Amino acid sequence: MSNRSGTMRRIIIRAIVIGAASLAFHAQFQDRALGRAGDQLRAEGQTSPEQIERWQALAARSAGPLSVAWNKRTGTPESILGEIYRPMAVDAESAARRFLAEHAVLFKMKSEMDDLALERSFESVLGRHVVFQQNYRGVPVYGAQTAVHFNQAGTIVAVNNSYLPGIELESVEPRLSESDAFDGVRHLLPRNSRAEAEGDLVVYDVDGTSRLAWRFTVATAGPTWEMFVDAQSGDLVGQPRDINRYVSGTGQVFRVNAVVATHDNTLRDNNDAASAVPSSAYMIVTLLGLNNNGFLDGQYASSSKTKRRASSASNTFVFDRGDDGFSETMGYYYIDYAERYIQTSLGFANVNNRQQVFAVNRLKQDNSFYSSSSKQITFGLGGVDDAEDAEVILHEYGHSIQDNQVPGFGSSHEAGSMGEGFGDYWGASIGAQFSGGFQDTCLAECLDGTKHYPEDIDGEVHDDGEIWSAALWQIRGSIGPVAADKVIVAAHFLLSRTASFNQGANALVTAAMSLGYTSAQVSSIRTILQNRGFTVTV
Ligand SMILES: [Ca+2]
Ligand SMILES: [Ca+2]
Ligand SMILES: [Ca+2]
Ligand SMILES: [Ca+2]
Ligand SMILES: [Zn+2]
Image 1 (spheres, rainbow, N blue to C red):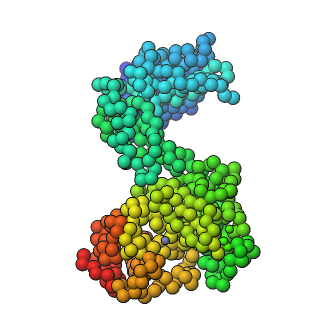
Image 2: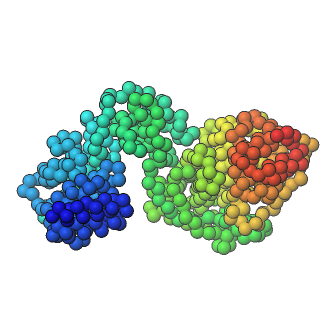
Image 3: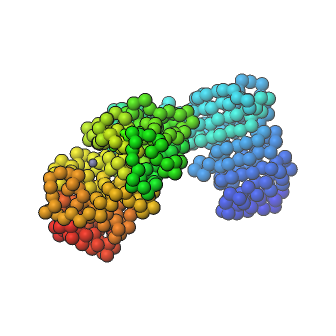
């Protein structure tokens, strides 16, 4: 007997060192050695030898084979499945409490269970489900719940457990009030997404440390932010997190615009007629980040200022250009695409990380604009509807990007010109990801232009912006699309709202050096800008 338990102990220790797979084997082995039912017993995760013994005591009395997963941090069962415990002749909550109390040492719970409050008790086709919330001295422990699931016969068939044992806090009285705590961190939320917060006092455990914290949820038109603030120190714990659940939908868009999509510069608008453009110009795309409310509302874009909005319960937005829903879909798709590119490919977490609201049919003129006061984009209907063209959509989004990086950017003539030039560049650079190299007439003329600073300045921001967009386009040709897009966006951070062309040029070179670009890349950028007539001294 002692020999056998000595062997077992050695096996236990080795199993723990080797990890989950071996532990599963061990548990199976030991169970069989004890002569109990449970050939199918499986274990996942790790725990201590003492806990294994307690587990064996539970498994020995189970009605059938079990599986268990261990919580790495606490060493307690995180999930138990199987016929765990025979029916008891009491109500479900009492039965659940009796079961947990009997195994309180295994679950590392207080035997009196007075820190478990009934959260929910409900029926399903399986049977009854009883969910407890853990409280610490009356304060809910965030995410700490224990659920006991019964089948129709009253047998316990599953336990989920995230109870957190061993919490020790000096006080559960917050030093900071809810509003003081939020005031200290609200500036950390992405710009333009600040709103009123809902706060709850919780015990929050992260990285093995428990603390008293205010949990805030901040609903905005786009993301819903969740953030935790230490209720004693006021420190933000972790990062704000978007807790919305987004869905994907289906949309139909032009590959950039009708001309680029067909490589046909002779296409005419024909008063918005669908027949003016061949069906080959369209492509079906996945619309990401939708809120699932049936409209084109999502994480990074919303067509909510549009009149008579398109809607689809299945998030299917397939229209041709005869329907304004097509323009809404174009706006949603390309804005969302650009923002994901900024965050994922360029690596900026804080550049226009918000929901861009736009309207596609409120303006009759052949014009579009971004408003730095409302932060919204309005696309005009004159001629070809502006939102039928990704280059226009992205141009306006370019203004939004710059306003987000440097609020009020463009307040001098040269800064305004750089804003127009960046918008044209941005539309062309993102558009080129779809166009396979084809440029429509306008873009080719603007971006490959030879305008030179300062003698070609005529005082109109779009005209003078062509000096800037042509320089940026050359930089892109020299160092590549992603490297160019990244340094161009990064350089905005270094500018004031009234920056001059020369400041913009020096900022580009400074940003390239700060990003660690090679000396060949940096000198190429510098030379291109100097050849445009800018004075670059960095
Ligand atoms: Ca038209
Ligand atoms: Ca239209
Ligand atoms: Ca029109
Ligand atoms: Ca137009
Ligand atoms: Zn513009």
